[in-house]
Length: 271
Image 1 (cartoon, rainbow, N blue to C red):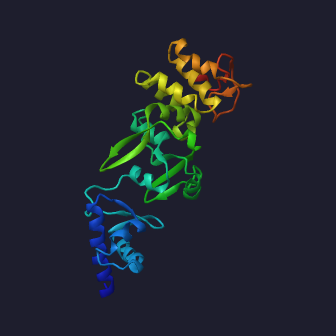
Image 2 (cartoon, rainbow, N blue to C red):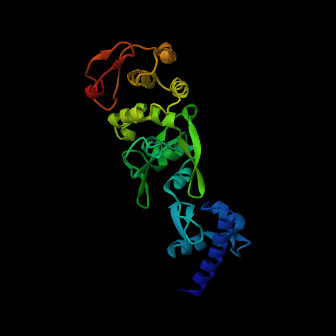
Image 3 (cartoon, one colour):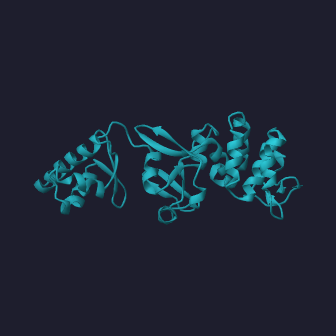
């Protein structure tokens, strides 16, 4: 190793140590610049220092200008959910990933699903057809309008807080986009297994902020789950619009029509 590289790596490790002591685990070059002078690194040489740190395994590059500090400089490895919080703004772990967290599925997805209203960054990062991959983890960003980014809670994963959709929002996302949740049968099973945990008023309130198809599917699902019809009146009152919506949007639209909810029951085994 050249003398110049030794100097850069040694100073770089001092920089990382100072960042880690302040609780920073995933960092940008802008974060590092505010610590560089104390670590004896010129701001003009910061990128070169990080180049050496990455080559020697002290940091792992997430994307341009964003790095994860490696153990033992941090106490615990960085969780993939923690990484997701830095890839886009207004991010929440969602869909199948959130279903796994809330014990709504026995399956453990290897793809991390992220709800976000940051449409610009999401388009740059990846989609379901071309997921964004970091190390051996794939990330899919599900874009929503800012007014539909709600229903989240903070949870600890390792040493970091992560935003994740709550139980009710997770179930609704399954009705809206079952393909991101293991399929409609998986979503129906999740409703069945969690019906005693669901805050009915909350999930209805959430649904009323979303689209008509989700409102109808929720009403159908809650009715099939034995929820008292008086509780479902807000869903019926908002159920405007002509035509029938498929129960499972990923399947052909054939099947009997449920005029009460305006649903085409295209998944016979659930009817």
